[in-house]
Image 1 (cartoon, rainbow, N blue to C red):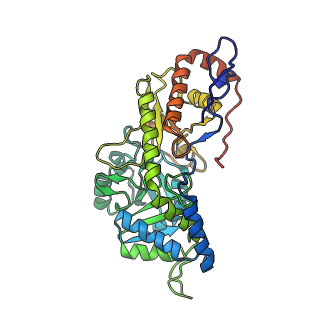
Image 2 (cartoon, rainbow, N blue to C red):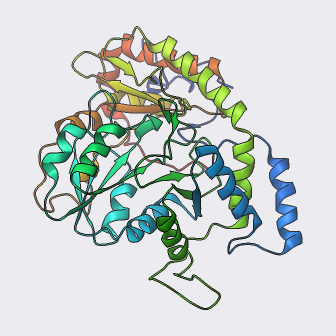
Image 3 (tube, rainbow, N blue to C red):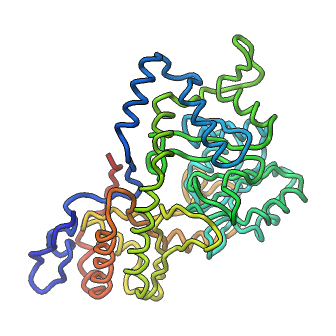
Length: 413
């Protein structure tokens, strides 16, 4: 529960940056794990120990694959240790090489999955409204070395899948999607997971539904599914026969059990996410220069990402100063995805990148706020009050913040 701020330095606003008690007595993290029913997980864990089958395609993993495939509406799901490994397995199964077009405004793991296999990520700019890869720019990036297009459903909002598929079909390229943010979301009435050659989900602990750590490949392509399944198990297609270069990508039984429990307890998480999101949207809607990324009516969404755009040309504080104010209040808001993959190592300064003006702008404007089961709507409203106070006293904030030490990031426990 939040605590009332108090005891600021004389003549300064009631903000922790000026000596007030932080608004919250605990840290609020972006992506704090959601756990609804630990007892159900413990029961599954007991059954795992009774079977003495801890990994290597046990019944929990197989059940999870079946549930995911049925929920998405595809013939095949391959559960994997994490989404990065899932992307790498999929790239290998598709025999991608040369260059693959990918947005720069995404988690760097998307690009790393390509580069780790010797594939060059070709960074594309994104649409300013959706934050997803801009199909109008993709075609100009295609060369004789291009073997695929990798779209990312950022924040769980779908890419323009039809436009990307038209380009991929016309240019005879494979199209796949990084759906790490998008479990439980849809494009129109079609669930995410059914587009392109395949899609990859993440079930990392920071996602709204998780398996501690995990990922999955969803596809309707029978042969592609066979190749992915073999690659994830060292290339084995029989007891002592391999068919291809493989890796150990198997999900543990404990992780699969957590995934199954999370999938069966989605309801309370979605309800809390939506209530928190609505509190944020109401509390921030009149602030100058602040836009909250909204769902679209035709698509199903999980409300897991509360993402602001802070337009520094209109708002009285730019994004980084607001983040500093919130951190001092123990609201550990995060800037996503700063500074863009193309400005991170090992990609910075490598080759020639076309200008990415939208990515550059968003990287300096976006700020993600905490949500999930760790907090309640009245606490989201309290975060909004902090933003209002910071904006009302922007001049004092700008003057006082240079005295503060730099932010040090601490991962949530």
